[in-house]
Structure formats: C-alpha cells, structure tokens
Length: 270
Image (cartoon, rainbow, N blue to C red; front, side, top):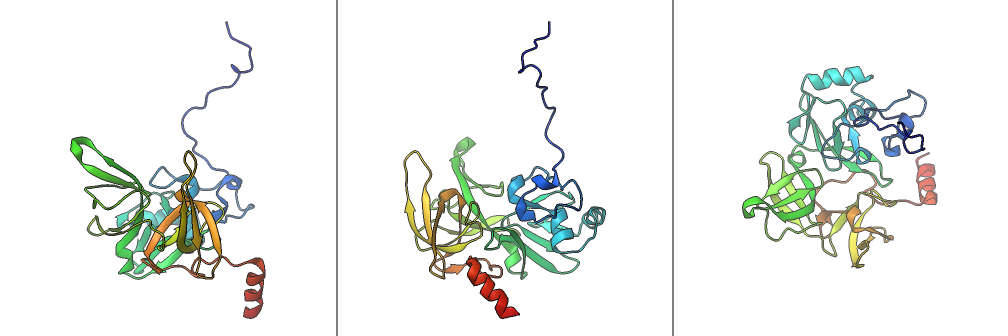
C-alpha cells in the first residue's frame, strides 16, 4: 500500500542535471538576460561549474570568432583549439583559472585569469609564456607503493614532486614537457592573486597569515596601492616570488579601484 505522507510524494531525480538556465549561470560569465532561456552547462572536467568558462563562451562571447554555438562547434571540430596543449572538441569544456588556450591557425595564445572585479579575462600572452602554467597544490599524499604525489587545483596528479613543495604552494608546470620546472612557497612577502570570495581577482603581497584552530585560516594581503584586505587561505593563489609575478597580469594589474576612482578615470578618458 502506498504511503500518503508528504515525504513519499517527492520523486527521485534521475541522473545529473543536463541543463542550465541563463539566470542561474555565474554572473562573471556576463550573459545578458534576454537573449535566450538557457546557458551552456559546462561538462565535467578539471574546474568546477561556478569557477570555469566554457569554450563556447570564450570563442563566441569573448574572442568573437563565432556568432552562434553551431559555428563554435565547427571551429572545435576542425581541431583548431588547444587547452593546456591538448586539442579539445567539447563545446562546453570547462576552461578555468590559469588555463592556456592556443589557436595555432591565428598564432594566438591566451591565459584565463581574473580581472580586479573577479571576472574571467581571456588575457593575450606570448608564445614563451604559453609553455607553462601555475598550479596551486591542493593535496600532498603518499600513494600506493610509497610514491609521493601532489594534486593541483586543475585536477592534475604529479608524482615524485620536490620534497620542499607543500600544500598551498604554487608549482610552475611546463605543458610541453609535462613536469614541474619551478615552485613558489606560500610565504609572507610573496605575490598572490585572490581566486574566490568578495576580493576575487585582487593581487597583492601576503602580509600576514592567521591560524584559527578548528576554523578557516585567514590571510592578509596588501596591494601595490597600499590597500589591505583579508580572505580565507583557500582563496589565495601564489603567483610570484617577492613582488615579481611569474605570469603577465591583465589590465589594471589586480588593483581594485573605489567607485570615485573609477569615476575619475572614466571622466579623464572623456
């Protein structure tokens, strides 16, 4: 006999969600409300849905190489687009922070980084810089057979890392040779970019690290304009030794302007 209690009337969902409504899409994708009902739902991949930018939006909305999703699909199927040195043909492949996008046909290279307002920027870089990317160490463990390995923010597992590499450090990963060429410690005085939270996209020097037992560690950062802010350690991504970044930064250099500063800058242009 069927139960008529309210809990029993809830039917189970079958499988993962296949669609994404436009209004539910992350705001940093900067999609307009009125040109459609749906947004491209990112495939499963190295970056989370809310922290990625699908290839479709990169080619159509940012680089303007296509007018429609169908055109993006045709470009990808001709195997013109590489992400981190590998050809990708999935329209909704989730490219994320620090990923290198190469288009051989036009001899262009881009890196996905955040601007000072926390939105993804498809930042143009040179060929030398496109050979490597920075990866944040998320996990450091010893695997089967006593093999030490690290897991990075973009889903990579790298075996036999340098013994000095610890969690929260950043490693410089060469995409051609598939190995670590350098690393930066998570230390006071090093340059970092914030990759989450209210201060997403801001760049500065690590000033202080607070440890709270049983709670989140807080990191204090000071940018080159002298502004100080604090965020959780999970949001901080080290990008340089001292005050020199290992990657080129987009316009604005990660310094967040106040509303009045932005207004003055806009008026100065006019």
